[in-house]
Image 1 (tube, rainbow, N blue to C red):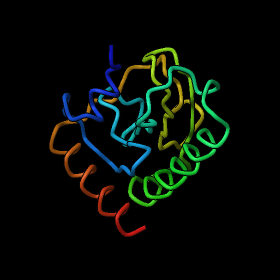
Image 2 (cartoon, one colour):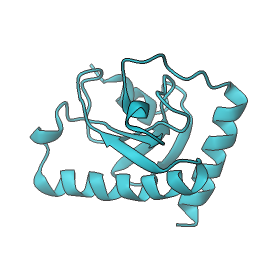
Image 3 (cartoon, rainbow, N blue to C red):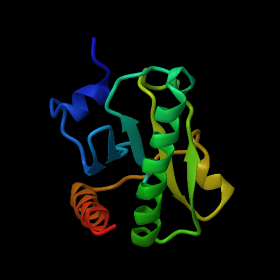
Length: 133
């Protein structure tokens, strides 16, 4: 059965898309730990990042770096934190999180509430920045 991320990539479940190319897909997390929290996933469903081929892991991180760059330009923050946990959804995914402090990367804290309008505006800004990067 396809993971929820594969269903998002295939358009079966709506998302706030940030960017995509032929191999990777980025979208805003709907349960963000910080405003702008973005997930980057390979289109080819692989459960565990370290089961991926070396080149695929490298390319995923290069794509994530590109997304992190536009995220940092768009969302006020000191840095973009990165995390690959891999327990929530059985599909490799990279968390890119705009941060000011280490506490901003705490997945145990209450999630940030973002309204639909802010999701749409941010998604559009990031898509535009991706096109121009």
